[in-house]
Amino acid sequence: MVGTLRVPVELNRWPFNAFVRTWGHADDSGWWGLITWDQRVRINGERRRLDYAGWVPADQLRRPNWAKTIERLPRIELPADVGQWPNPLQWHGYYIGAWPVGGPPAHDGVIVITAPAWQDRD
Image (cartoon, rainbow, N blue to C red):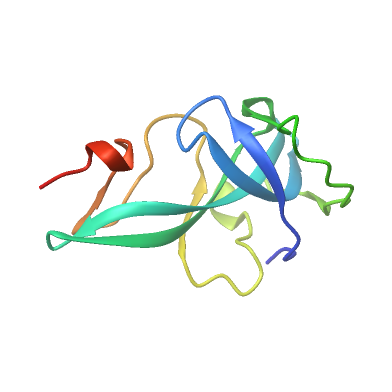
């Protein structure tokens, strides 16, 4: 598990805005950021929010111009086995592990809502 500090970041893909909590370096794939965000979903037809966390390649992240955070986030070496990459400390949300490309994954019975809130209607 890794730290609880968080710094706002923008992604060049969904979810577009998140918080990075830790930087990790993998020998075979370079730098990654462990991000967290609040995701709108549907579970059994009911709208809800789930906390998500996952590792994305660092080149997909950038600090927003408005963020003046000076926090120095932890940097760790990531194990060769991607399945062993750590989740955030005391994490109670949905941890997706390494997430290099594609839409946000979901477990069975969960539909991820990626449309803007004003377009999300029944």
